[in-house]
Image: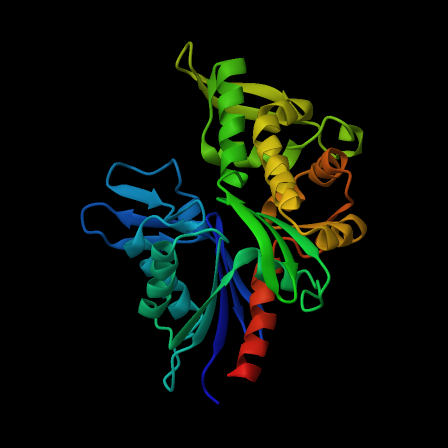
Length: 332
């Protein structure tokens, strides 16, 4: 059997690729840099991300996915083809079977765009699965039984909340409040409070190093302050300030409350028998956003339900595609 089976977590911030028999073989930022005049691809992934906010006029660093869906079809196709070539996934004998993930509430047009991009990148067959379902499988939740499992998957562009039972999604919602929105919250806070303009990458570094969802438990953090450099809006010159961890909690408060409200909405729509399961089994957090300090305790306190962070939160979806590919092969 020559056909390779490939699982792709096509994220707004990062793309992860799983190859059957090899595991997660690629984890790169979803960024492509392009020469504006020739439309030629200059760099993809980490190398292109280094260029974000630092390119000359004729070079543009593009993030082709926005809010979990394809915003720039050509560039997404370019990125997928590049990674397929890099991993040598298009063999001489056959093209790979690809399972690709999408947010739970996207339109059929957006779904078709994802499928088309995979076909044009060289796929023989394309399966599309909803992200929270794949994340649950990757987090080792047994969703095949008639018991309720709740997953909160926080990525770069979207947050998906879903309750699963008997292998399918029972109720779900998807909102465009996730890692990117939290970065924007930090940029806005620093601008309003310190009159300092910072870029997306600096905001992401602040979130990763001292970001916290709640003021409680800051004492447990290894680093509680961070030196931030940017352009002073008053003088127009470069300036550096020191930001404290509790300030990030204030900056991100509203967006995180949106996530809590989404969880509450899904729980309100859940059949009572499944609700009883969630109270005992809790909520599993997956995705990069799950690693935000104090997020589990914030959600747990707001909803009075136990919350756990998946051990492999970052790679959950990619690993879930691997498990599902095995099952597809058994069925197919």
